[in-house]
Length: 278
Ligand code: NAP
Image 1 (cartoon, rainbow, N blue to C red):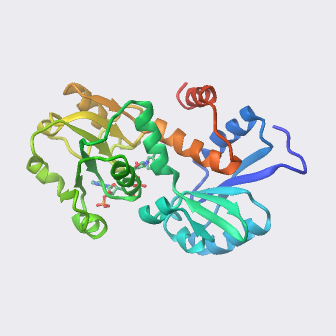
Image 2: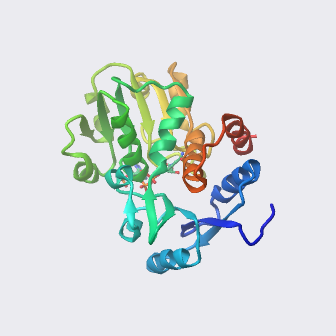
Image 3: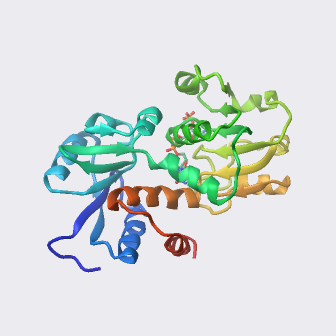
């Protein structure tokens, strides 16, 4: 990687950020595509967010990704907001514009690109969503955009789900224990809780075998481990299951496309995926 007087700086702000895979993904893309860009981690505490964004602008930083714990609070700091990010209520990408940054959410577009890649057809189909946190907000936005017929939303804190989604007529909110109230049919199920994430990879948010009879296609947003208990159970009951690695890759690619104002060609995507999952 050659750094010179014209190198554009990108980065990720969060706390912590040292574990983030984003720098290697974005630097791989910049190098492959011959873009004069470098991407670095910026650890930023909640109380420093506003000053960090103003400082980044003054320093000429071209764009940044935003991760935990700033994805919601950063909405207060942007100069413009993309419609999807506004509806989802979270920003994970900041693109430099005149006077500040425009906030986007590429988790939802990354999720849509993963569904597309894995040929999961959501249009006019009923979907079960497990979890109602930040990732579920992006997933539900995408599912509604691509025409899911109805959504059964199961969350541990039902009040949280009711507060955010209670008024949506195509969304029915249930407790995990009430999964049997879901009408018997075949569903696409998106696992959006953090249950099952390493090092607690033996856990699964629902363990009842009968639940897995309902699932034709399961997508777990978790990618560490590569096969979660949720995915294993979907497969044992004859369904197809995918982890969230493609979503991770595509949300980074969508952000890179905004930063660099170009499309990433298909052959580079496949090379990038191989880097993630050798
Ligand atoms: P979050 O906002 O903290 O939400 C966590 C969700 O998990 C909430 O619904 C929470 O329920 C639920 N949960 C946590 N512990 C639970 C437990 N013991 N039992 C039942 N439910 C529990 O996190 P997030 O940002 O949405 O991320 C969720 C997962 O998605 C993480 O594993 C993350 O790594 C993954 N993710 C993947 C991608 C990707 O690109 N593949 C992108 C974003 C996120 P309550 O509401 O009751 O707390």
